[in-house]
Image (tube, rainbow, N blue to C red; front, top):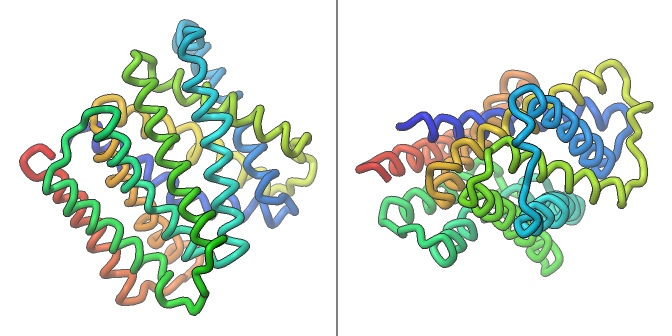
Length: 287
């Protein structure tokens, strides 16, 4: 396992804790849209400070490449988040999470068709193992919730949107942009989209615990997680990165046990084992 694989794993683990930080913010009275707007603005500020500290040249992008960042940050990022929130409201967290975790399938298809990445038996086996693992971890099949057309539509749209976001990030990285640049511009455009929708950043509603949640969401789940992910994505296949990132529900399950005393059922343990197995498969023969 290379350092680039570890970057993706770290990003997945950090994103696995997003529920802890978001819950602290929503307990303060913020809506899902408010959280997205606050997150994007806060992350954009942090990335700007980091770039000014490291090297100002990372703020420079070519005009002909601006569409990539607009599509990933303004359309895909808030798009897949919004579809996921709608799917949760129409069904449940487990079902919405499972449908969003179809993203690695679409990432693999996009990377094969447009980035000319290789499709190997190890990738296929790892993809199947990780998706089945997500089924068991989310517990979606244990819930008696009808999967009608709107639920499937919004759920798959969140997966496709996330896949397009990852694909566009890889496209920007292939153009020679630094991970700091790619991630910063994604959040700049996401902040613009979120502010056009909410027209407000309701930070005044946050309690002390809400501010702790906001700090954690921006620093760990936005700045560090996205930077690590794009750092790893810069040198490994997008399809491979998408599969490794399914470690996120694994991490979320562990965090749920540690912070909320949630019970890990046998089916969740099986799912966690399958996800770990998929990562091991990707490392066989340099895959």
